[in-house]
Each structure stands twice: as structure tokens, then as C-alpha cells.
Amino acid sequence: MIIPSNVTEIYFKLKNRKQIKIYIPQLLQTDYDAGVLERYFAQHKITKKIYEINKEYYQAMISKNIEYPFELYTIIKILWKLTGVKNDIKINNKIYYGVEDTNKRSVERAEFFTPGIKRKLKNLTEFARIDKNYVQ
Image (cartoon, rainbow, N blue to C red; front, side, top):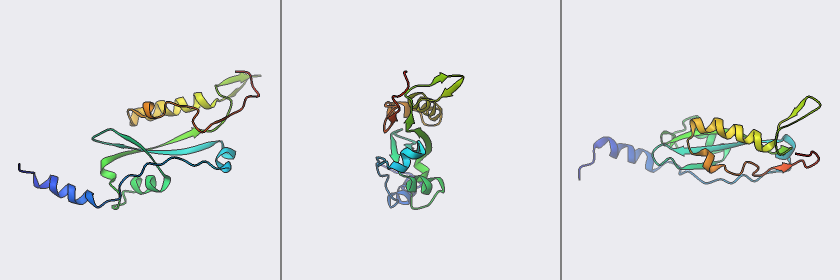
């Protein structure tokens, strides 16, 4: 089998780059105090597999750091609501945006750039602390 020289060149160029690492956010009280979390994802352009990555990896990929295989991935950031009521509600003409509904909107926007992210982020209240003081 003959391998085109450009494929070989690309392989050697990418093989020594930092490999993607699966990341699971470890939330702190400061995250809950802020009420939102920035989550970062990388989708492989060929396999379409989606990985959650940390902020450092995200920033390196976005800045096209040559130590990282940025050419192989589509990178996105999602704002993830952590605290509040579960679903959007209106009380006395004021809208309280719910955790689940807000995260659903975020995921739907992200789906445009990263098809399949909806399947990755099925639990829209992941990491959330729901305020149960309001009747839903």
C-alpha cells in the first residue's frame, strides 16, 4: 500500500502532540456562588466524538498552540447554569430563568457548531443546585 506523502507528513506532525484528556469538572463553592460554569468541549472532525476538556486545553487549542492537535478538533465553550429554579417561571412580571431551560437553550445553540452535543449533555441539571422555594 502506498501512502501519500502528505498523509505521512501530517501523521508525524500530529503524533507527538499532547493527546486530548477527558475532563470532569470538579465544582467549588465559588462556582455555585457565580451561578454559572464555563464548560469546554472538543469534537474530533473525523470521528465526531465529543470530549469535555479543561480550560487550559481549551485555551491552547483556541490559540492554535502547536503542542496541541488543534487541526483535528472543533472547540466550543458553553455557559452552564448551576443555580436557580428548575424551569423558567414568571412571578409578578419578573422572569426567573431556570437551570434546565437555560442549559437546554445553551445546548441547542452549541448543537449548531458541534452536532451531537445534545446526546453528550442529556442531563440538563448536571451539577445543579435547584432552588426548591418556588413552585414549578
